[in-house]
Image (cartoon, rainbow, N blue to C red; front, side):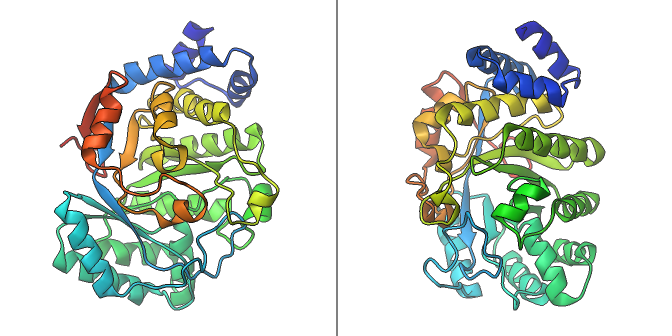
Length: 349
């Protein structure tokens, strides 16, 4: 079975039926071994990481997702000056990337974001990994322009890459239950494709472990694969486990099990093969020990130092602080792999 699945993955021939059968089959360790073997063939033994900082502009938000613990948690909005100071601090520890996003409000229009990004780029030499399809959608709406125009203007002032956040589960029947006011599956896909068309690479993500089924997760991954085959604009795939503390959805969902956490990293490696070669583990969500295990189940990237992740911390992610580079390197070496710093676009440093 390992040989057959391994070859089908490399030939880009895995079907949805294959994927469902694999996650439901009794021998999960065979699944993990196959994914790890594929990882070794496709990207080798290096585990990549980026030195970055997450800056959450505001926790005010009009969307009201049922899984969100961050909304109005501290009730703040950062000024351009505070954001700039935060970037200065990040650069002192060698950050090459700033993840810039946050809540969505009616007054955050295209002029607001262009002014902010221009301000950052004039003052700092740093890669700006910014916003998400949901923010682009609402910004365009707030400004009476198309999402393509919004993206074009943001690129012109210096937005380097876009996050693949706000994907959650790209199945509308699930979205209606967990984030009814958020961008639809079709609009998410459209905005991501527009970004790729404009030469703005993006990440791709999934938030799993709330109320969706394995079929929904597989559907989501195959949609991402379809987009990647068309645009080649995704830099990585990031599975993010649902954290249920301090939110409405946490009252009805216990989240994913540890085995599911490992299975989703493994099955994504098998589905994507070398179409999306980089599978990232979110140490902020999973914790450091589980991250090490996931890196032996098909993943090859450990994300970034983060410095701050208010969104995960608010939802009970006890790991959402700062992971220094030395600690990242040690964590990777401890499982017999090779640490490798990268840029946002996966250029090796």
